[in-house]
Structure formats: C-alpha cells, structure tokens
Image 1 (cartoon, rainbow, N blue to C red):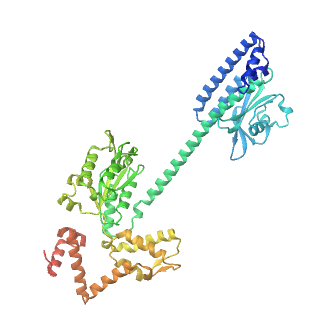
Image 2: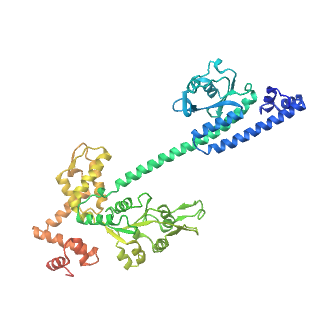
Image 3: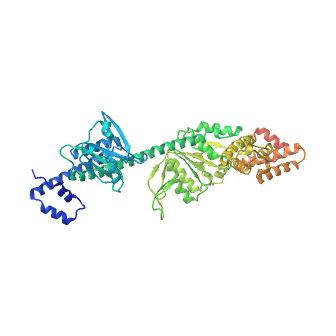
Length: 547
C-alpha cells in the first residue's frame, strides 16, 4: 500500500486555482510512492465523479424530488464513506430550508428558517465547511436530530451551487465512518453538490413546466366551457316561426358530419349559427377556425387556406393553413360566394380528396374537417351566371340553413332589444332599465338593412348616450332610424285612407319578394307567409304584372 500523502498537499495539487509553478514544486517534493498513491486517489475520485454524474443524470429523469432526494443522498453518503446525508433546498416563498428525511419508516419533511443552522450558514455564504464536532458549534440546529432520533457527531457541508452562481440550498454529509472529513472530502462534496444542483434544477424546471401545462389545460377547459355556454341555443334570441325553423334544423344536424351552407343577409347572425353548430357537436373539443373569403385577394387566400412552405418568397416561413388548423374540428368559410373560380376549383379538390397541399409544397396533408360555409349571395343565380361552380355548391350545400332578415321577424325585435340592453348595461356600467314604448315602436318599425348587428349597435349607442336615465326615449335614437321610420310613415300616409295604405304596403312587399326569388311565386308566397293561390289573387286584385 502506498504511504499516505499530506491532505493539504493533495488539496493544493488538485485545486484548479493553485498556480502551475506551485503544483510542479509540490509534485517534485513527493516520493515515487506518494506520486503513485496520488495517481490512484485521483483515478478513484474521477471514477466516483463520473459515476455520480451518470447517476444524477439518470435519476433526474424521474422528474420527482421525492425520488431524486433519497437517491442523491444515498450516492453521496456511499461516495464519501459517511453514515448518512441531508439535502436542504431553499423555499423562496416561505424563506425556509426544507429536506425530505426518514422518520421511522416514513419519509417526512423538515422545515426551518433559512437563517438557522449550519445548513443556513452554508446557504447564505455559498462556501463549504468541515465541522469536527457538530454539538460544539453554536450554529448547529438540533431540530433534525430531535425529529429523527439520530445523533450528529461531525459533518461536511457544501452549497448547492449552479453554474450560473445561484445557490439552491446546501448538502450535508454526516458522521464519517472512519476518521474525520478531510479537505479532499470537501472538494469532492463541492463537485457532487454542483452536480446535484444541476439535477435538482432539471427536476424543478420540468415540475414548473408540468404545473404550467396543467394550469394551461385547466384554463383551456374553462375557456372551452365558457365558449360552449356562449354558443348554446338559449343565446339565440327569437320566437318567430322562421327563426325557430332554422334552429330546429341546426339542432338536427349538429352531430351529423355533413357540410352546411348558411344563407342570409349581412348581419343576420350566420357566424353565430355556425359556432352553435360546432359547439353543440361532437367536434366541440377541437378547433373552430373562421376565414372570411372576401377579405383577402386570391393569392393570399390560397396560402391562408392551404398553408405555405418556407422559402416560397423572401422572408416567408412555413405556416399551416386554416384547413390544417381546423383538423378534427370545423372550418367556417364566410362569404364563400366571393371566392374566385380558380380558388373554387382548388377548394373542391381539397374537399373531395380530404387533403391539402401547401403553397410551394408537394406533400399531401390529410385533414378531417367539417365545413360550414356562409353567404349573403344568391348562389343559384351565380351558378346560372357561371360565377360559382355547381359541383362545389352541392358539396357545400348538403344542408341549407336560411337565417331570415330582421324585417321578416319583427316579433323578435323586443326580445333582441332586451337581450342587447342587458349586454350594454354590463359593458358600459349603466343602470338603464328599458326603452320607452315610443322608442321601442320606432325600433320595431325600422327596416334594419344591417339586421341584428345593426340593431345591437343601435342599442349600444343608445345606452352610451342615455346619461343617468333609466328609461331611454326616442331622443337618443340615431338620426337614420328616426328619418327611416318617419319617411316610411309619410310615404303610406300620402296614400290617404287605411285601405289604400295597406294596398301600397302589400304591393311593395309582393314586388320585393318576387324580385328576391327571381319571379318564383311559390317561394315568394312562402316568404310572405301566404299561399301561392293567395299571392296570385292579391296580384290580380292589384293589377300587378304576371298575376
């Protein structure tokens, strides 16, 4: 066996801060036998370090401090030939040091202020210490011994320091089995503690990441629930027969995989219906992705819909399209009638093949989507004029849901006014209770070319201008609404007696609906709420062309 080498000599030789000239001088002072012993000791230390790093890396994969703590302490205890180890971490929220310790046969937790004990001193100073007699040191915290029933005699302590200089806590090795702790032991523990700190940091990082992911998942679930509640049938306001018929159809096809075409004038609530279809279907957990086909030129619409590969143009990065993003869910395509013929052909192919190819790409990407399209155009007329593909029309129009304009369901206006009044009250913090009967009559009598959206804006505007009033009068209604209803009243009043005024109204409505349906009397009669024969008789009575 090689004779022992002075611990101080070994420490100076192994300390990377020792000047090279001093190291060479110290090596020259050693005998050959001491040099051999030193080499063996260095080799053994290097082996222990390598083994510990490997163990720390593998143990840190457990991503649990409850598993990591005892394994690290076990390895350090064995490496330094000690009786046991203690690992203390700093809790920044409470200002305490804590450790997992064995209390009988159960793993428990010990906590104390970070200013106490040798552990606290080493944590605060960031420097290691060798304590030959623990109970003789006034800093020694006997709480751990009292809880575990264990007697600490001597100990070696090192800070848990990271590469960035942050101290996470302290590592203590307790009761050397043979002899006393040496400077070489201290150096080895410093190294092992730094490796333990890295492993702990990894666990804490992944623990923080997992908590963030769990929090995000809970937040997403809450948001999905809130959105789902927002797009229930209860939030579609109206009692008119035409609206109720549309809602009955929505309810029937929600869980069907078929594509849907929603028709109706601007502002009637087509997107609200589309979202109701999605959030009441089996696809509600997946994405609802909306795209306005009229808002983008053809070149941008193609990349927005199908995606684009990196490098297609300068500065362009790879990006998934709306169809990819809607995979498993619903793609809402608003203003589908404004899509160019070439884009219609590409869209048709994507729907037929159930796959997309990004702009500039060659790989076909499969997609599982339900398409809900919407338009305020007469697509049948566009087909006849060769502006819209008939095959795409039938691909989209598996189920047609028509949303009637507000002027055709005036009985819904008071309900909508009350609904929007409640929203505006909450949004603006006003204490408005209702509209006056005169103001409400004006709202009911207006034609509402912008439909429900225009009515919502009118109510919001009126509440904003209401001051502190609890009842909104006609004086705060918009000028266009006052002029529109007044002009309409003057127009029919000029006809004289009520029969003439009624005739004028009926003739105007018949002409309007015949024009809207392209002269189709059966459809016009249905929209007017009368029979085809009743329409024919009225047209004949009033001497209208085509009777």
